Length: 271
Image (cartoon, rainbow, N blue to C red; front, top):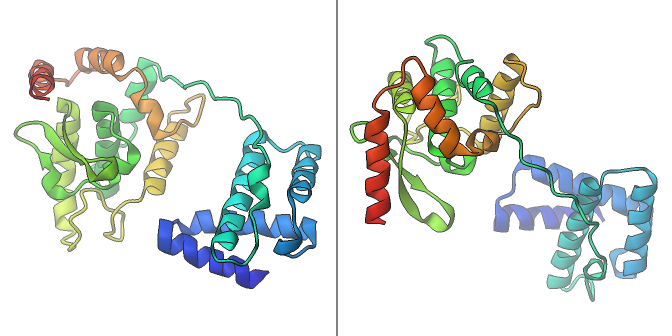
């Protein structure tokens, strides 16, 4: 069984470039499943899988956890079936538990101020973190888009970013004056590292920041300012139009907000 799981891991890494953390989670799910089954893959049917899910329900596991484990089992049997290692994928016949949709989390204006102002100091990591928080808030970028930014994607004269989205599609995004100021403070620290990487945001080893690292940064400062919930980066972009308007007007050092608004309207006309 370990050999089949190892082959599955190689396939995931080659085809989907999954992270080490994802592989570890998949392996844990599969080990738990086959420990319960005590059967070879070809001998497992959909009733066996339902029996495994019933055992998870009896342990009071969350529906989200059960759905994830079933997704892992489906992916594994799909791989085995494609490689002709089993005759069929029995997990296809098993329905996923209905997972309730989580309500979006909103930040108050005071919480936005506190979170974005949390990084203090002129060190590399502090100036970087400040720029990241300002940029997530100002631009509405996805974390995956932020981590793919390169040095030459930032136009400090025009307050614009060239963003590479899904499907390698590029778009131009206007950013707020506070984000521009934060980036200008960060860039000298970034340039001083003198690494070959073109990435805009680096870790302390001079490597491109990962999505996971950015989320850690947001959680770190969320805890520092004692927010009620440890919110992910997406929460900075909820109701962004309203919060950004209030922020630009209320921030004691905000400036050039009218210039940004005009540029945003110009871009809408062009597109």
